[in-house]
Every structure is written in C-alpha cells, then in structure tokens.
Length: 307
Image 1 (spheres, rainbow, N blue to C red):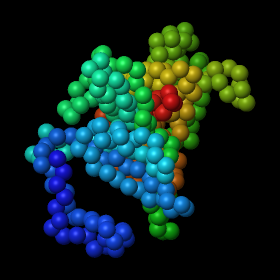
Image 2: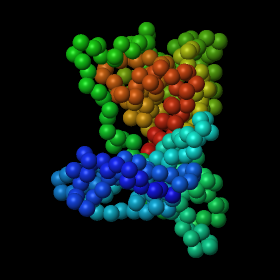
Image 3: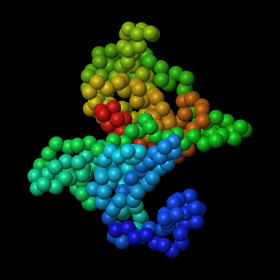
Image 4: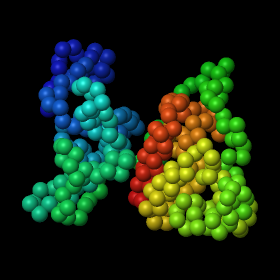
C-alpha cells in the first residue's frame, strides 16, 4: 500500500540517523484505503525520541501496541478518505485498541475513536458480534499529552487579546437550589430536584463551604443550550464511581487546548492566562462546533476514567 519515493533523500534527517538509515521526502499511496499513524516514544538510555510509523493495516498498528522494552505507543491516528474534498483525507483519533478471538481462529482488531464509535477491518465495519473476550492493548492517555503553550511576547497581554466573559468572576459560582430556581425563573425547588433526577442537572458538596448541596450556575446559563449539559452528563455517568461532573466542566482539559469545557461552550475566556496554541481556534469556532468539541472531550474523559 505504501511505496517510498526516493526522489530526494532528506539530507538533514539522514545526517541525524545511522549510516544505514535512509529518509525520504515522500511516500506514495497505491490505494485509497484508511491507514494508521502509530506514534511511539522510544527510550535509549537517557534519550527519548518520538518514532512515528505509517501502517497500512490495523493488525500492524495493534502489533506495535504490544509491550516492548524501551517503547511505548502514545497515540494512534487513522487517516480516512474524505468525501468533503476531491482526493482529501481526514484524521480519526483512536482512543482504544483491543484484540479479540473469533470462532474461525483469527484474532480481530477492534478500535474505538474519540466519538465512542467502535469499528473493525479496513472499511470501518462494526466488530463481529461473535468475538470472544477482548484484550486491551492500547489506551490513549490524554493526561500525558505535552502542552503546546507558545512563547509570549512580553508586550503581548495574557490571553492573546481574546475576550473575557463579562461575568467571568461569578460564572463558576455554586448556588443553592433556591437561588438556582430564582435564576432560571418559572421553576421552584421541587422543579430543580426533578431536573436533577432526570439527569439534566447536578450538584456538588463542598464541606469546607457548606454541607448543603450547591449547583454550579454555569449549567443553566442562558447563552448555553441546556441540551449540551444533558448530553455530557449522560456520557460522564457511564463511568461508575466517577468524580463530580464539575471536575470535567470547570477545569482545563488537554483535549480542548487546555481550555475548560465551559470556556469552549462560551467562546470566551474566564481567566486570562497564556494559552495553548489550539485555544484561539477552538474559541473562534461556531457554537455548534464548540459543542461537538466538548462532547468529544467528554467521551475521552469518560474513557480515561474507566481505565
């Protein structure tokens, strides 16, 4: 499937490698099928470097995930033909890889992407129903991702001139059920309890402040659709004994450019600080896309918590 094109050997890369190593500027794809990039950290004594391998088949990607001295797979992307543009491709982030036996004697590779979809085979079909017990060989550890904070010009203000939410100071405040009902209007304390019972609200308890349950006010903010909280809570509650949803919504998330999910939903910062290189793009996206980013981050967060 891959054909190395020795049109021009890369002199800089060749100078960094062994005498028997060769590096090429281009690789030709002989057929338009999905393929994988497996990114591995290789340790040689005190040295660590990133080794990325292009794999034509999922079985080869899974084989690289097997434990090996001095080697750890840190991320996997599937490159998939796109219909959006002629000859284009799009990237699918892989968060889990399993091997599972089939009654026919073959081992199947099952993959899960960051939207929670499981698939198998070159064409992304659903995994066969008759597979045996799965063996997990890879999980994306989002908490180990390297930061991407760029250096700031001393004359450049923190936040890169991105807007702060005008009510940032009190946005993450936690209020009583009575205060939340008054803020929403047309609802009483029983209504708050009913919404929480339906999975549309959540409370937190901070014994240092008060033993009384309190509700983060952002979850009923008028400019954020209520449905996004319902959808995220449904994802987060798939994990048994998971931490409070507040730890997802209000804390910086590496899958959202180190923004908090609330900032992404708002499209504005709550606190001025130096930003990850992806943050401006996320904040500038339209509201629908920002909600999809938060849903994808919630799935990864839940997958990580389930390990």
